[in-house]
Image (cartoon, rainbow, N blue to C red; front, top):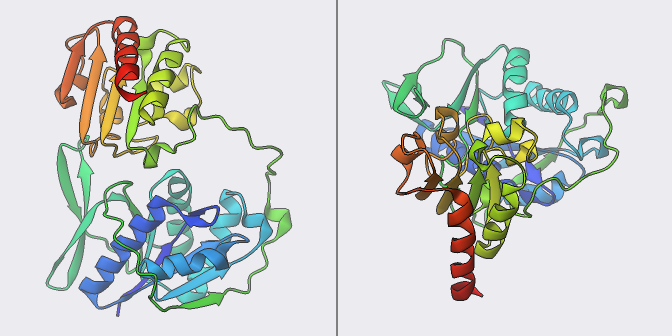
Length: 326
């Protein structure tokens, strides 16, 4: 029987969307292999969130409830997760390959002596052998991979899985793990939290995103985009170039090394459309591109393209939408 353990990260007292995807992937994999899904949660409210992990498919949930784990600290998280892994000996450890998962996957696989495969979107079983599927060449193709080690760490690509429907009536077991997190291991300390984003909506959860790039010419242009996003009830995003220039915080970056998003509507303003950025919007339903460069790669991905200066398009669009929506 394949033993599957999922890291179910949570935001406050709710599972993250990435955790729900990882649990859904794990449940599907367990069904195919005759295994079972177990989950691990960290932090002082882990026990109260555990029931959500059970509703999402976990038969057993392990909790490490310690105040030091309230905020993400990579060393504390790695040591806590590895303690659970040593006690439960899973064959497959699954986590969402989000910002936290990107910090954890390599470290944990090294500790476990396991193979690591990231950006996984699916799997196949042939003659009882598992192969893993992930996008390659900027999402232009899919590769199939097998591993040479008996244990594996899987990083599930964000927004690649159906989160499924939680079954609140599911029954499972919650097991506290007796592990004392060494305080001296906490090499960083949170002094104050600053709301850096221009929107209260997380990019990964947004149904509408208005993103800006180098073509805006400076941070001032994001004020126009913020007005449009606010009107549409959406979130603000940005290209890596805009974030690297310091025009907006780095947590707004959309792309392979930023947030992978799946909105109903993605408006790309002044974004050329490098492969790294396009990899972050693969599953966006409708993409509208506004750019003065008619040769910009973003137009190949766009459903609607506007070749014009955003300074004339965005204010006009915002005013017209106000008449319709307000």
